[in-house]
Length: 216
Image (cartoon, rainbow, N blue to C red; front, side):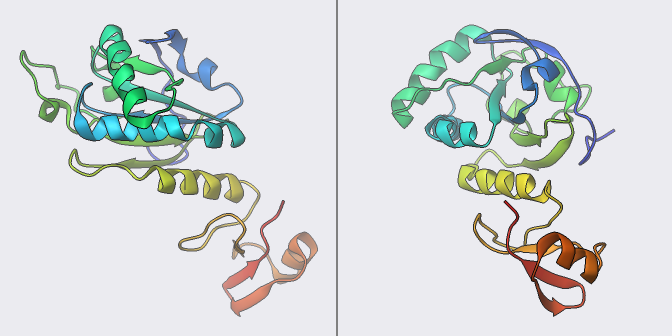
């Protein structure tokens, strides 16, 4: 069964380059982003993990923990982090899960149940492990996206999506291309009277499309 939006994400224990974790306990009361890749020491993923490291202050502002996952081992992760930090000129303080047995990759439906790691494998053998999962403090999946190996993930968009999710938790929705500071959408399920009581003034573009200032 595929992991769907609003499902409670699978819990697991795993080794990381920073020690053993129990995933739900590690999330705690924070938001979390699990971002995966098919192999250490690969070019696109090195640039991506460097981008994650450069955004460390932004994740902290949003009460969000980030964690990587690869099907390589702890020692490979430790060695690869040197390249990540060198390329991004930033400390990679986040842990990376060692998923050599593919347990987490299969739990999160990134690989089929019969998948295995052949001898002399290449990143193509685990190519679908190129996913991002944004998880709320309630341990529910809020957003997921999967990229091909040749297209680097846009972490500015992931940050924007996280902002949108955290804003929508306040009972509103966000329009296309929304960024913090812009107006938000009042859900159709909220009556005009209730909308005015909750949000104050709003603009009714259509009966079903009403915009208001973003709540604090």
